[in-house]
Length: 243
Ligand SMILES: [Zn+2]
Ligand SMILES: [Zn+2]
Image (cartoon, rainbow, N blue to C red; front, side, top):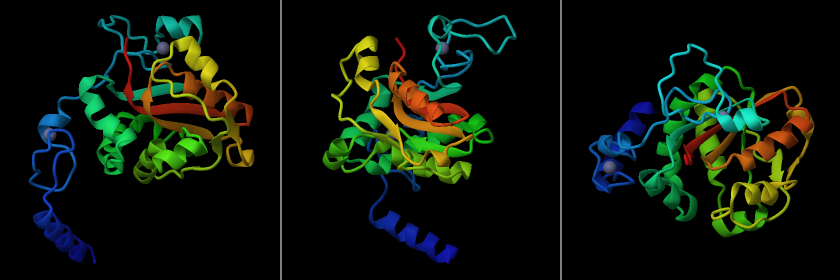
């Protein structure tokens, strides 16, 4: 069966050669990103904040891996760690915006592949994966939740189950695109609910989203998850807004 599938994939690829989802060049083999585009993402690497993953712009002499950024010292997030794979720059937008707003659900595969590599240190620490939910009205309009699509691939790679309907967004809120940090916090305050909290009691959770902007959304999700009995909450996103 594996051989048959391989032959079938080759036939499909011959008839419909796969294109790179960013530069649209045809790819020699199956995949969604050419090597040139894949290397253009601005990967977030060490040194970075031990809590929120904010990258430090200077080399650290200290071997202390637990250094926190000024924001996390002033007002720590409720989650126990966060990793974003790449910076949310104009290049990253070329894959995120069509994925999020342009029905390009097939981009979940290349995006999640990069996330799986970036977040691998969470793999052994977590019990379940939870996507950041969108409200039903947005779901009906967009027809899919991008965080759920990413979670499905990450679940396969990490061999951990996804809880798709445990964390829900109970209120429809305006899009946060142009909101300040304070407005974002108010916008998401109290909008999430947990259904069947026995599923998360004592569990370590990996929260999945596409973009980490101020962290207000994932922080609010963490609050309700911990209030409902979760042990630890980690956050994995594809991109991060760095100011
Ligand atoms: Zn390309
Ligand atoms: Zn931080």
